[in-house]
Length: 99
Image (cartoon, rainbow, N blue to C red; front, side, top):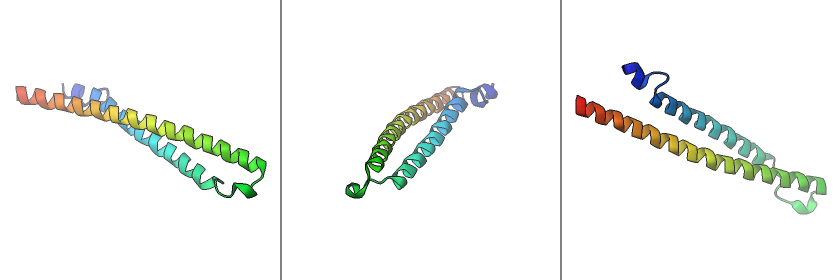
């Protein structure tokens, strides 16, 4: 009975796993954005060759894609957190009614 509520295959365990995965994804994306910004040559374009400008545009595109991915991951994280809160609230309600 308790294993069904808190075991490895329970809803709360699966939701916690989703939150951990979303957090790891968020950290990875954040690191890639940070690395891209650190190597960006966004200043002084007048002295930069055409090849460097093309690389900077690619870096900017990569950053925009990663930022979109960050936003998506944040939404998923918030949804998982809300589902986990609801699951625990149902457990508290069930325990309160039967306890």
